[in-house]
Image (cartoon, rainbow, N blue to C red; front, side, top):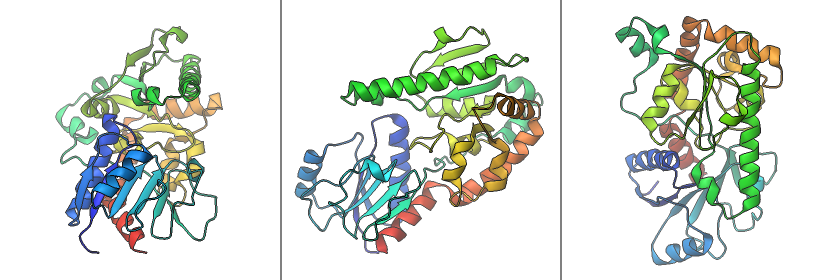
Length: 333
C-alpha cells in the first residue's frame, strides 16, 4: 500500500476517545502513513469544506457517516455502534469501509461492512496485579474494594443538542445503577461497592457500603481502580462501547463481571468463549448474580488465573496494532 494521508475524527472530545484515536494514529504512522488527528468531532458541512481544502486519502470517522458531495478519491472508514445509525448508505461506495460495534444483520453486497470492537490501550509498562502481589505480600488489604462500577456516560453526551437523547441516556444510566445497587444491597454479606461516573445516584442508595465516588478524568486512576477492585462490573449490557473498560481491566489482570447478553457480540470475534464464561452472568437473576460475585470475591487465585490467561490472548490479538492491521487489509480488499 502506498504512503497515504489519514484524517482521524473522534467520537467526542472526551479524553478516553482522544486516547483511543491516538493509539490508532500511532499504529497507522508505524505503517509509514501520515496522520492528522482532530481533537473533537466535526459536522458534515465543515468536514466537506476541509476535504476540499486539503488532500486527504482516507477519513477514519468514529460515530459518524460519509457526507454528500465528497471528492470520490477520498475513501471513508466509518466506525459506528450499529449499521442502522447510518440512515443513508447511498453516500458510501465499494471503496469505503463501515465498521460496527454490534454484529451486522443488515445484508448489503455492494458495501464492505464488518464488525470491529475496541482494543486494549497501548502502554509501555502497566503495573499488573502480579506485580502488586510480588511487591506487596498482603494483596487482600490492597484490594480494598469488593465491587466497582464505572459508567461510560460522559460529559460530552450532555452536549448532543437534543434533550430527548440526554434524558434517555441519563434515565438508562440511572436505571442500571439502581438495579445493580439493589442486587448487591440484598446480599446477606456486606460488600464495599463503589460507583464512578458523571451522575450522582447516591440518593437512591440506603446502604452506607455503597459509595458514589464521582467522575474519573485520569486514565491512571481508571487502571488503579481496576487493580484495587476484586470485581469490576462492566456497565455495557448489549454491546461494548467505543471507550469500553473491557480490555483495560484485563490489561492490569483485573477481574470483571458482565451481563451474559454480551456473549452474542463476543462470539466469533474474541475467541475467548470458555475463559470469558467465568465472568458472565445474568443481571436479571439475583441468585446467579449473587453466586458469581461470591465465587469470585472469595478467590483471588482463581480471579488472577483466569485474567492472566485472558490478557495473554488480548495482548496477542486485541490491541490497536491488531485493529490497524485489519483496517489496512480491509481498505485494500
